[in-house]
Length: 438
Image (cartoon, rainbow, N blue to C red):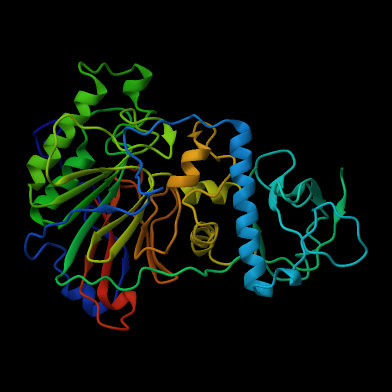
């Protein structure tokens, strides 16, 4: 075990279920533990030209002009898909013009919304930026195009001609989902997101409690999402002296995890750019281990993995939910969780914000264009966030915010039991999921 060997007193509310998803009869019958050991070898599905993001990948070789070109190409690609969905494959039906086109007639253009002065969008300084195919930028006139409807939402962060829009189009889901998994026996999964200890100590009590839970309720798979030691920890500030390297400390931590939960449990560790043991670049390379364990798999951030027989999980450690909501301008725009998740699906990426909301994030545009893609909707999408915990069925994808294992209001983690689905089954009829206090 990590830190002190003395078991600590259970905190108030420990074991309390704070969110539940699934058919009530399924929840009632769920054992939350593995029925028998399963051989699980996660397969990384995010690839570029047959290669995955590995610890040998070179990063931060892109420059500003390349990043602008990548963003412009993506904008034009998404814009074309929107037009084809709305007007059909015949491109003559949707002739596009520059965003600053002067015309008394109705014209069609594509662009991204951004704030003229940076930061959060507002209704008086919102601009429309064209791609490299449709250059220039123009001011949106106080959202006159949207005032005729009962909702709008814009969120992309980022010569003065006024643009009075009549209609706006956004992309709807048009790519396929993974479909039902073809698992032959129940699959138990536990998911926890860092930080795993308080920012003022190295006791790792929340992680110890999680490991004790996994020891008593053995899952088939344990997913640990970084940071394992946050860059804001007291050790980094020099208030606590560590008598070993960060890499050695992490190796010992992981050895303790394997020792407690056993070799039958598949352990997936997702890296984080906020971890002192990881490269502080997004997309984040998987962390390296000197000692290899057959049941431990180090994953990059983000990852889409096939866990077992068509069961596909999308995972990221970045709080993209909080980042989007921070820079979003929304009025009567509906459910915010569904809105954020659909942004990821519609933009086909785990991180659609440009530039990043976190100014401390070292963003590699070239790697992001290759290794943050969402080509199809996974069965399960795990989005740890400081926002309220949730479990939602969004476009037939079980979307989960398990919360943080260490939290001032009480740490939480998620547990799932996935049954072999029958043809035509809805998610809630074969997946039981709960967010539980540690």
